[in-house]
Amino acid sequence: MAILLNQSFNPCDLGEINPNTTVLEWLRSNQLAGTKEGCASGDCGACTAVVGELVTINNKNVIQYKSINTCIALTYSLIGKHLITVEGLSEDDNLHPVQKAMVSENGSQCGFCTPGFIMSLFAMYHNEKNINLTKINDALSGNLCRCTGYKPIIAAAYSAFSEKDQGSLDFYERNQSQFIESLSKLSEQKNINLNFSDGNKTLVFDAPSNVGDLSQLLSENPSANIVAAGTDLNLEITQSMKEFSHIVSVNRVSELKQIVEKGSEIEIGSAVSYEEAKSILIKYWPDLDSFLQRFASLPIKNWATIGGNIANASPIGDMAPVMIALESKLKLRKGKSSRTILLEDFFISYKKTLLEPSEFIESIVIPKPSNQDRLMTHKISKRYEDDISAVCMAINVKFNKSKPNSVKIGIGGMSGIPQRAIELEKVFLDHWDKEGLTSAAYEALNREFTPFSDVRASSEFRLKVGAGLVKKSSLILQGYPVQDLAHYSESKKS
Image (cartoon, rainbow, N blue to C red; front, side, top):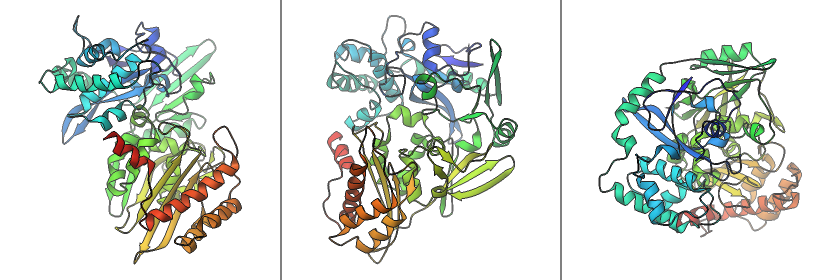
């Protein structure tokens, strides 16, 4: 099984490796040690590398480059793709423009985080025609530096692009046609099945290319672990030292990577990444832009999938409350049979869902909004960006003659599951423009939920914050100039 690696046009055989091996582990065991291990959980960005993937846009093959956290990506998930690390940027003794800019702007001190910053800037260098502070901050949202400070790194981003504006092309731009040709040959392989023997045990990795083969494979192997990006599941490998005996990857299944608009609905395949889904979501719900900005760093959004986030069933997963408020449905597939359920009915208890053995999420179906609908989203977390929520709330209001006549509220962090707040919806409709809304909302939340206390927030804090977010939403609907910190951050960046 092969990938393209750095500046070589010839396939690089990954070798016989344990399917649980992360990209970072594979790199460092193959003397590509510029990529560093910091947190092993996708938080610090020291392990950032860039993946190039062949896609078709307007009937033309192009390579899309995206930054990823190699510490939580499985090596076999890159089969057929192009992996670029910090070792693959310079040409002989000539530094890449991004590397040269980091040197000239003094963008590095201890240097441990520097390769990750360079690779994030390299991805932006290829993906953007022009830049501003907002784009730079977004590109670097997954990279932490404890000693240099970000000002010289931001200056390096501007400096690198000033050279690009002069018309010079780096190695990957000059040789794009050859990389496309090489990736086209690699992508000819369809279903992947790999077995790794370790003593008296055999570990298996499967990556089918179509939904029919995926269904059959899971029917024959109901205990297999389904992985899309694995940004959460793979933490069990890196943090808990767990080893999965049979991994089934869905990130090659073509039907699960599609976004389809049809009539009054949008259908998003369960293996579509957050960054891939961003444009269609913002098109219909513009307020989601600032919410997604806070959802996760760009390397996580490049890799993580909406379906995986939902199937993970975390009570503090940010997307499930939004999808519940939007009255989304899930298409579930088992063998040749399919069923459709409301997302709000999917979660049973902590980490337990309605999924049966061998069943998987095929797609998420979202009704399109009317012109009078308004979605408001709120995320409370200790860190502003790239942090787990203490409380996440989404309120979807439908209007009739300037007055709410229907509301759906999804909440995370209030119980062991993402949940619809039915009692709170009634209170909101009855009190949305009244003085007593906050206290009524608190009482409704207290009746309907028993929030847990943990290191992020106490039970009482969650109840009070939840009630405050309801009041904030009502003030926004009434036209009061309520400061939205997400939008405030965006204005400060621009």
